[in-house]
Figure (cartoon, rainbow, N blue to C red):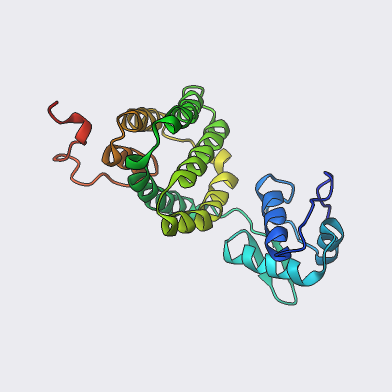
Length: 229
């Protein structure tokens, strides 16, 4: 198993399993470890410079998070692409992150809004360019920004634990799916307007529709920003 050619990550002696988890997860997410690639304990020990126990603990946690497959006495490998779960993953992202958006938007510091909108602009530019990978990269930065700003620590923890696992399969299959570019353009425009107005309901619904969730009461409901001024 080839390991990343970059310099060995510096691992703290405290919580080695967590540091190993981060290093292996990052190598999976950036493509250094490819889908289906076998992960060899000895090679990982040499790469990270730590013993087998924290590495096995890290791999077990990566299995829990859906990034690694472990079959005892057979293999440990990066999970393969599973296109059949992508739709469910996208919708689940919409549910979790829609909640993050709902509770975060009302508490946004005005100083943080321009930075968030700049990343939204990157997503909109990627949609205009019909660039699926650039759009995914921008979406991931928006996810990270919204989670970082979330005032609900329990919800933030749930989002942190689930987003990497859910987005991994989406990223693996991105070249085999054609997005609905018109829908994405409309949703990002509405999300941008809702963030500017700090309208949590409109922001949440735009974000959920981005992730293929049906709008509630679609023929009866209007966002607060449409109400009489």
